[in-house]
Amino acid sequence: MSGTLKGNWNFPTTIWAGPGRIAELPAACQRAAIARPLVVTDQGLLASPMVRSAAATLGGAPLFGGVQGNPTAAHVEAGLAAYRAGRHDGVVAIGGGAALDTGKVVAFMSGQTRPLWDFEDIGDWWTRADAAGIAPAVAVPTTAGTGSEVGRAGVILNEATHQKKIIFHPLMMPRVVISDPELTIGLPRWVTAATGMDAFVHCFEAFCAPGFHPLADGVALEGMRLIASYLPRACADGADIEARAHMLAAASMGATAFQKGLGAVHAIAHPVGSWFNTHHGLTNAVVLPYVMEFNRKAIAAKCDVIARVLDLPARGFDGVYAWVLGLRRELGIAHTLAEIGVTVGHAAVIGAEAAIDPSASGNPLPVSAADLERIFRAAVLGQLAVAA
Ligand SMILES: [Zn+2]
Image (tube, rainbow, N blue to C red; front, side, top):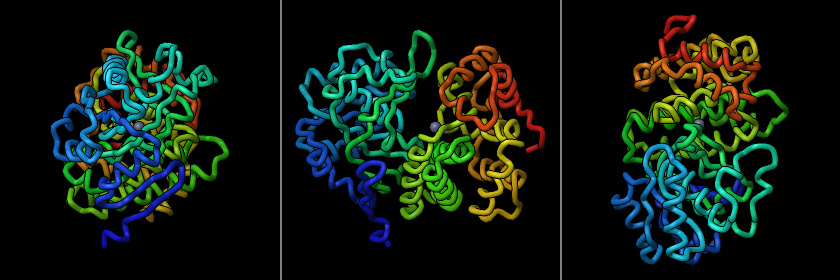
């Protein structure tokens, strides 16, 4: 059966998908023209047999495992120091979104002379970068959620300002992705659920974002269909390789689709993550229905399409909304931000920061700082118009 789960894809980058394909990591480095890779990974994976054996296949490539939780500028600096000390010529990033983002940004920064924050995703700031100074990266996701493996950006926390900043450059896209579902079978159920919901929110917000982008819309719809089918299975049985393979694909699809835009869920989740160090996917999963209610009128027609594609028993906004609440319950996702340790203490700041987050501009309805503060407060306290 697993033979049918194998594929080589060429968009949005080179993706080698299928069980066991981690064995092709040396070939991936060769394809990416990396001879002396630095392996960047999460601290929690550093000692894992998965990462150890991957590094061994690369001739004992050095490991940098200084990534922990949400990546910060300090993580990037430490990674850059390791990269330069070892005179590497590329990065192999293995792990969840944090490790992939850090690895991509280390490769990007390796040959730059300007400071990191000069490359925030604002206007054409990315053109400030010296393209010749961007090292290649190979990405190996071990969670199915962020889709960072096919993204052209990394989200890095500025600890001085408590703001998550998006560092963007088109050449930050990994040259080769190894999408091996066997690497995700050991993920705990809650991580599977939280990261899978992140992928769903990427597809959902991208599809609902205004703008003409039928390519992204198509990818987003199929991504949602895969997640609806396979996320409950992957959570029920972590060793379900078919479910794991489809979830990895759906995660890459979410990140491919969201070049169309995201929305208020991500705009709120970013400052919440900065202030409370909450898990990104989990935060999105909790906040989603509160934002859906705010956007209700603007997304009614889109929800009709989603309900048809997911073949839901009830159509339109109500059908999708009820299904989202049911899925959250089934996966054991908290209903309020309070349950994951968030308080209303910083509500005004979070509203203000969410309003200037780049994701806010993709929301189907215009959202002010006051709107976002109100939605945030509702999500902390569990105040949905419709009882969950
Ligand atoms: Zn996300």
